[in-house]
Structure formats: structure tokens, C-alpha cells
Length: 313
Image (tube, helix red, strand yellow):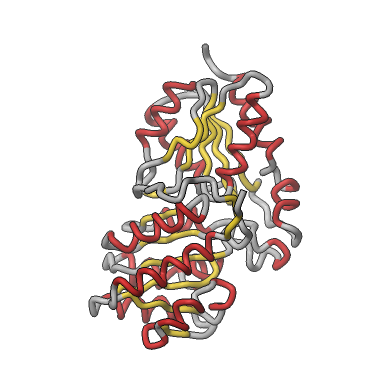
């Protein structure tokens, strides 16, 4: 199966958008080579703004540019976008509901060997708590292209979480994604694995393992964390009777918390959450870190079995 980093797919899409819309501009914080926005810089040097390591200034400048009718895409690592420039995003972009898109690379544990200073494990919780913000995380290159294009078409701030390592291309090239509408990636009737981003592919592998034991696991790709597709969560709860959330993020505040809010209010069924257990991770290879911190396929499978054991028949 072909593997492409979502940051690469996003950068290619920004070039396409730049050719189609002269109002598209890109801001970068001294890591264009890593986030791949150098592609846009090479083709549109007069619409590319290298701000240096000054994320707060960069978000403020993007806010100002948006007030002139331009369509700014702001690029940096997720850990810096969500925390170093948090106040600028909240007060100068989300409060006036400006049309700024934040494409945040290296989310979750994917910057593995760079250590906890570069691992964004809190960003989804921060971003989904800010009014007016839409929060997206695509599962592969196809989803990235579709969702970044959708973000460009809607008005208002959008946070698109991307990752560093190549991920399997799990969707056909012509798949179209709608913001706020989850995708049923795999049907199932016994339990639903609700995953986001890179973890959709891992959840699908776990579903394959569960099938060997006679357990039918549905996999739901919750590519939009906010607004959450509540209807899809309720439908999954009613039809399968047990849920598991899977995310490369602190167990607090992200996908698991968002789904738990829906379950508590709308449909009480057993729910297990797979995520980083409220700790900073050490440096290391990405997939080894997922295993160490309880996000491996065996951990997803174990969570599904635990949810099933509490299921009311």
C-alpha cells in the first residue's frame, strides 16, 4: 500500500489552491523544508511570507491579512501553533471569526525522536475548546486533499492537524469528505472503533484482528473533531452497543472526551478510550512510542474486548 505523509499532501494541495485563487497566501515559521510549504514558496514567492521563529507574530499578521480579503494558510508544527500562539489564535482570529486556516504539522507523537518539546499531545483539546474554531485531522493523503480544499471554501478559522511520517493511502483517489460528517471506513455490528487521523489505519488493523476472533468491529473515521458528528456517534452506539475511541493525543480533552460527552448526554453504552495516558512521552521511533504508551493494535483490540464485556445485550 502506498504511504504518503499528510504534510506532503497538504503542501501539494496548497500549490493547487494557489493556482486557482490569487488571494491564497502562505505564512511559515522557518520550517518550510519540513512542513513542505517550500513548494508554495517556489511557485508563488510574492505570496509566501517567511516570518522566522515568531509564531505569535505570524498568527497576528495572518489575522491582519485576512481582514483585507486574502485567504491565509499558516504553517508550523502543531505544538507551536496550539500553544506558543494560542492567545493570538483565540483573541485575534477566533474571536472576530477571521478566515485564517492553520495547517499544523507534526501532530501527536509523530515527531518521535525530537522528544516532548515537539510532540503535540494537547493541541486537539486546546483547539476544540476555542469558540468558532473548526478542527480537522485527515487519515491519509486523499482525505487531506479533500479536507484542505473544503477548509478553503468555508469561512472562518480552521485547524488542520497533520503528521510527519508517511501513512497508508486507505481511500480511493476520488473520495470526497465533508466537514462534520464522519466516514464509516469499515462496517461492523458488535463494537465501533472511532478513530481520528493516522489512527484510523491502526483501528482498521485492529478490526481485522478482532474479526479473526469472530468479533465484527465497525471503524468510524472521525476526521472532524469539531463540529463532532454526533449523529454518527449515536447511530454507532445504537447499532453496535459498544464504543472505543482511538487517538494519538492525551487521553484528556480530545476525541475520547468529545465522544464521551455525546454518550453521556444521548446514548449510554460502554465506552473505552485509547490515547496517551496523561504523560509526556520520551524520545523514540514513532511506532515504538505508540506501542509503549498503549496505542498499539493489541491495545485497541484489548479496549474493544473490554467494551464488549460491559455491553448490555
